[in-house]
Amino acid sequence: MSLRNFRSLRVTAGLVAAVLAVSLSAACGSSGPGDRAGQATAWALTGGDERTFRSSFQQWNSGHGGQPIDVQFFQNDAYKQKIRTAVGAGQAPTLIFGWGGGILKSYVDAGQVADLTPDVTANPTLKSRYLPSVLDSGVIGGKTYALPNNAMQPVLLYYNKDLFRQIGAQPPKTWPELLALIPKFNARNIAPLSLAGQSKWPLLMYEEYLVDRLGGPRVFDDIAANKPNAWSDPAVLQANTMIQQLVNAGAFVKNFASVDADSNADLALLYTGKAAMEVMGSWAYPSIKTQNPQFISGGKLGYVAFPAVPGGKGDPADVAGNPANFWSISAKATPEQRKAAVAYLTDGVLNQSYVDSLVTGGGVPPVAGLEPKLAKASDPGYLSFIYGMARQAPHFQLSWDQALSPAQADALLTNLGKLFLNQITPAQFSAAMNATIGK
Image 1 (cartoon, rainbow, N blue to C red):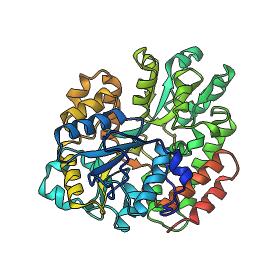
Image 2: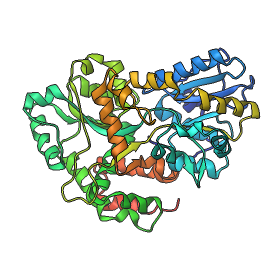
Image 3: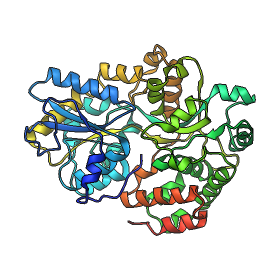
Image 4: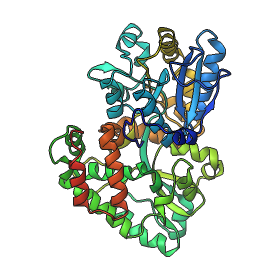
């Protein structure tokens, strides 16, 4: 979810060396449209829905020898830096994995991604199978630049049922209930909340939900519209005050600033019984299912919506997170690469086997009429909860670091890191972010 500045030509050898990449293709080593083999390429993420992506490309390549796609996988944080560098240098892969929103708009403004409107107009099935609310995140200025490629990803509150039983408590439905749990867990030497502070983007989930619960969607709409002093809205100031109250009450695991999300260290704290709760996206479920299946099969994983804030203007049913991830096609792709990519988007993405794979892995695809399939899945309760949460939300807020420009997203994560460490006050946070408006 986090993103860094669009430092287009400043990739360093050290950064590239740090990227963990695994190629599925026999013609490995592809780096974009300039690949000497001339075939289409794709970059995707490890973890989460990785198994579905791998299976999809393997099936595609085995059945479409004339239009193979060379795919590479990267860890989340490294990918976000690498893809922006590649896009800026005109060396992006044919299929660009993204989140929609402000980052996609920056690619559109730079002329680096292809307009898919003629393709979806010529072939309505390219978008008719998706939920309209999810498709919107791939539309910029009325034109389609990206199409969904995986499960919906609302953020929710996971909890360890065993630990709650130990203290005789129920999961929190409201903010005061959450605050009341902190001393109870700390008294048992259990961290109330796991948090991957080193990755910074997990900090954003608290900010997004609290601002929405306090002030409703209008507050971020004003921020996204670059209205002067939008970051000084009372809802932002109050949300950040509440975040620092959490920190000062000892809500988060000790040394949370050194906990890394890419290694899933935060999830391990939850399922090993060292932390009672974690606010995290639904992509955590497939990871837990892979790393500790007994935690799920044993009925130890609980989940509820982010707590309501009494007196707030926002609807407690509002959701924050990622409607889905998306594929865009590089504007630098050759006609042959583009043709292969469009064919894959049409026939290879979210077809029947693709949907089945996502559901089996614990994901909920953004397609209509899934209720019967989810009811028969191995995780019917969880999957139906996520599907209903996303479909019924009055407002589904795209993660702010994806909705804002790259420069603002970078500043946001930096200042949130300082806020969580009590290095700046809520007022100083607002002042620093107001200085980014329009950038």
